[in-house]
Length: 466
Ligand code: AMP
Ligand code: ZN
Image (tube, rainbow, N blue to C red; front, side, top):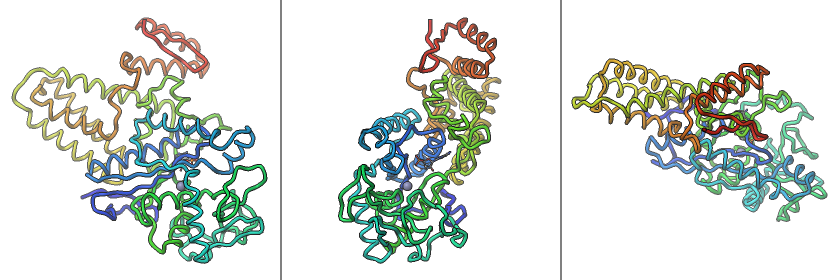
């Protein structure tokens, strides 16, 4: 059986088959670069990395486009507030986003179009919708999509339109639209705001039209997969379907795939709750990027991921187990007759691993197959039943696992520090944050005994070997 994926539109797991044999075209809603990405965003970007890697493993060429939303109400507001241009405001966050992707070992997409570089394509698409009778213009010059002209509206989210009362806010884009269900395609410029002079007048695009215009520009009017977090289903992706299909008369996307959210300690992550973390926040506490990558990939993407520091420590311990196992494979006793039973066990684990990933990217099951195999091989090693004659087979599967999960090679700067030391540093940080200074000091002493000295700096804890 081949790859199966859960399609939000059909509400079921279906066989995956791209429009062009051998080639998969994917559009992923990227970051709004008004701030640093948080670990919830990264969870979604890591799910997309997993999807990409599994498709490639299945032999497909992948063309993935991820947009950068670098103009919206918030960005314009912040740029005005700080007295800089939109570009000046978003540039550092764009760079930080790419740094985060690299730290998380997320394979780069083929294209990262920025909204502000594609205003013409958006204007062209709005003109097409206007010519087809799907829009109206309000007194201030803003242009809205009239959803009553698109009978399929609601097919993705199954939103009940009759429940959307007049005056209900669906979107932050509000001027004087006819119906609360309608959404802005183009917003007329307000005084002092950065805007574009176009055939539609002076203004800027709405958020939804960005993704319709850029996805179709790079991937064609119909393509294979569109992804995002569950919060994108409505209204963003519902509106993308309406705009794209109303303009082209063709089906827009074959498979809609959405990642569930990351929550923290059982609650929605929010700055006001003090449970909001960026990647930098976790790195400052001494956690390694690959430990974070592993944790965020370890839960099936359609289940909520409850982030906790205990979970991060467990992820560090899991990677330590894999590192110990890899070391043992390096030090196998010499032998020249392969262990057939062990080879069979490895083959079984490899099949379970691929079957789990093919089943809608079931990551937790794929990892369980790996860890059960590690346990069994460790037993064989304990009883002297594995030798250098088994190395290729055993090492081959470990490598195959890592071509997807990519967590075994050390992070930059990690080479000299073991995961056990890392776990101690993290445990000390946790104790310190919890006010347990006695424990924090005890761990500091233990680390000193192992030749690792800690320094608390304004940027967080730093260690050095002495
Ligand atoms: P944004 O920068 O807000 O446009 O979001 C970028 C991506 O992260 C989108 O695909 C969102 O759906 C996704 N996202 C936002 N919040 C979370 C969260 N708490 N957990 C997982 N994904 C999220
Ligand atoms: Zn989007």
